[in-house]
Length: 359
Ligand code: PMP
Image (cartoon, rainbow, N blue to C red; front, side, top):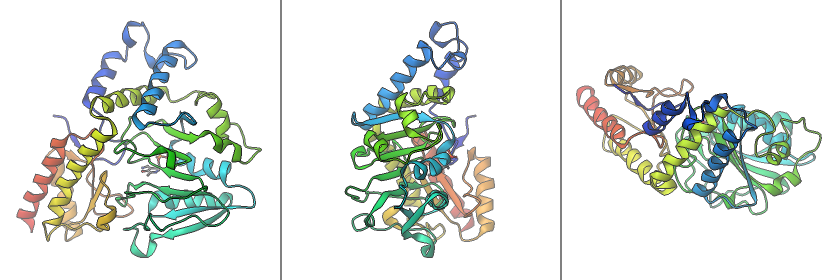
């Protein structure tokens, strides 16, 4: 029986996509060749890649003055590439510290240049965000950086700050295409694909073209966004398998209502779980209600022993990935796009039943 997969990433894939890959893995649409054997300079790859990029653009209405492509190295490589390119000499960059992922990005940037911390959620144990209506970039900042959804802490920006002329850069690894995004607000959006978009390997980059004019010079080839933008990510060999699968996932998203459809599903799934938490004295959510993530629902039981029991018993029911990240403990249900509605409903039922037996 197929598991109900609540893992934080790599994570659940749409069944239709897995089957499509299975059908074509040996012989790609009768071409006598697998996509993962084909040259990234050849027509077979190019055709698939162009379609993938076009679908990505149309799903998010990405304007023409943005470059879109995929890189390797995970989202983590971007923690370094962003300041190397855009943290201009003699200037500083604004970072919002809201949890593990933005903290890692800020820590890496601080090794490269001056970082100004606009907000640090440390005192509140990273359970809240600054008010997007009032938080602003500092004078002379090279860019303003945030993580739209903290995968480990389970907090998600619902609105984004207006940063005026200061480029806004966002890590959207874990909520990309789970809702519509006004790309024009951002100078750059990036993320690993291994949550909402496909199997690990590729990192998507959406970048306003004029950013290349305000980057540092003297960068080595791979570190230089201009090299990648010039050849839509084909400066070097791209993660072909991952990109192929992302292309199929994007078609699946299109067929299922696009970003709006994903948002409807994300609301329904997360409501199942938050409703159980809110109507119970047994479970609690540490996260500020205003910024609760629809992708990663973090919750606690009264004791760590009960949490361990929850994990063990849920596994016996075919539910995997519910243990919280090792750095914070507790429980976490990741409800990415491909997670069926029924699986979220099953988890909600299991939670109620577990409370009845242990509350
Ligand atoms: N940012 C966020 C929000 C993440 O969730 C993750 C991975 N879980 C990363 C960055 C790092 O991604 P990668 O492992 O692809 O480097």
